[in-house]
Length: 156
Image (cartoon, rainbow, N blue to C red; front, side, top):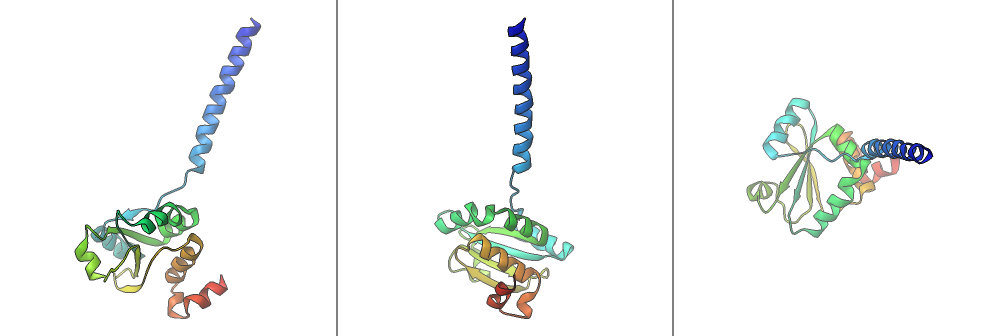
């Protein structure tokens, strides 16, 4: 009878811990950036009156992969982008006309657009999460209209 009680307690403890760990894992799950196709993203930006982050990448690009593993997995970056931008992802090797329209010469490349799809600014290359977060805040808050990015970065 004692073995049966120990077995039941162990089983209950196992079930409890499995459920607890499962819940804890869900709570700790990192959101991902909500990416859109170009036309869909433009439409959403107009409807929601949000700025657009247009990200050009390529399958062969090692800095794109690094960006996607680091900067685009940073929870602060993910949350800020999803809350304040319509995010568009485009493979420059597949969407060649779009890449040409924006003058993409290398990847990764980013363009910030207004909700009306007019270009605000663009950058290319890998950007660390902390710097990228400052950049997306700089554009979103319209601080680019009042000061340089280096001056803005000193204020936050």
